[in-house]
Amino acid sequence: MAGLFISLEGIDGSGKSTQGRRLAEALRARGHAVTLTREPGGSPGAEEIRRLVLEGATDRWSAETEILLFTAARRDHLEKTILPALSRGEVVISDRFADSTRIFQGITRGDLTGIVDRLHALVIGREPDLTLLYDLAPETGLARATARAGSEMRFEEMGLAFQARAREGFLALAARHPGRFRRIEADASPDAVAAASLAAVLPHLG
Ligand code: TYD
Image (cartoon, rainbow, N blue to C red; front, side):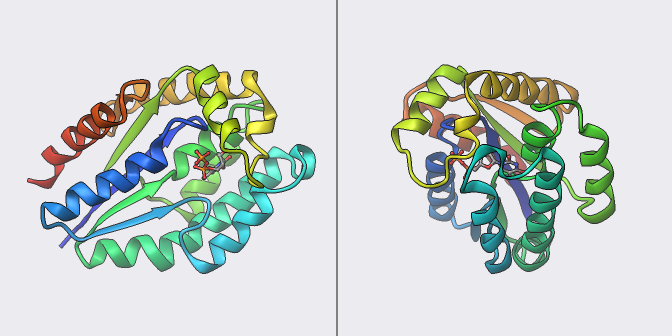
């Protein structure tokens, strides 16, 4: 059994975490075994790295160091959580995956796509079967993300221009990989977004 690997992407405050939970529930109700997971994190080791990268001052790490930390977390997540679930034939829904590094580290603070792509090829080498891109205006996303302010605010604190570059980057990436990406209008009602998400996934489940 091959399983199905789905990633959820989008700027901060796009609602993908809520939608991930709803999608997992909807698929379980249809009888599918689902592993819902997230990055950075998703395995005990990667959750430890999560605290290092999401908390503290915005200038705590350079974009280059972040690439190494996020990729190290991803490798552990892939080994310990994603690949085992896929080999059990499950649907894996990961709240963020490698596209987040391509965007947040690769393009928002200068062009580091070469490093991101080479490291990905070297130690990850796996893409999701399907990526749902939750797309909305960066102003809306940042307002939502700031409203639930907690300790994991490093990226939100990078500001509106940063989120705007990230949104453009995600849309450009989706345009380059139309077979893998589905753009979801994330400004619609939560029910409408959940319905659009399920509709995008069902064709992949035979
Ligand atoms: P996430 O927990 O998805 O935050 P939210 O629920 O607010 O969308 O992601 C946390 C932050 O980590 C987010 O600001 C983006 C950042 N991030 C990267 O910069 N690179 C990465 O590779 C990943 C996985 C996340």
